[in-house]
Length: 204
Length: 116
Image (tube, each protein chain N blue to C red):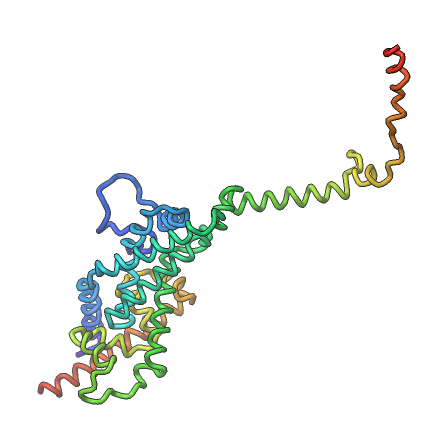
């Protein structure tokens, strides 16, 4: 599987034969005052943050805010980064996921699956979120998963990270990651089956 | 729909989700880079004080710092508990009995003799 955590985003890369500097080298340059390092890091890490946040939250505006905040934390901690302690992308994924959970908690003290259905016609934030994701059956189903399962599923099947990488991000064992993704997939299958039945009933 | 079909459908949804990933918004990239520049400038504006990372780099990183601490500790230890083959500097300082005075040099007579 492609290692997405330390390699540069080749989609934006040049054809230069020079090896791309590592995330850590770039962060060190940023900490030392290099004005060009932030752009490369933004191009490389920003899309990953945004992709995860979007699938975790199902809302573009919120995903943008979370991505901006996560990257801000990266800029601020740059001088204190201890070389070799971890992958920068691992740290950033973890910050992003925590920010997503915090945001969801602030919005809904209760979990989504236990939240009451919004009243018809009420243009609540939940309505808008659901409107935005209605075209995406997977997003609807993801929104109903418990946080940890959703994190594991998004990292494994959307970001295509390896289980050890996910274990590092979530600070759990590889076995726990496997268990979470397996349970998450079973839950998604059940939710999608229910949704299919519901749509069949509605359109039948 | 059996279990295998359901798994296949889910895998298809994952593939579709990866293929239709939202593009990274340009204005978000601009906001992030603006933040980075603000942090960078703020840091540069803060006194000429070096960051912890820079201070460490000057002395050779964590390994350099470790070596420096070890060498300093060894120096202090040798100072107070010198090995047998070295003179004990503490004893030298504390129990120095001989006092030298300018008069002991006995220069004045020779000086006067020369003057005469």
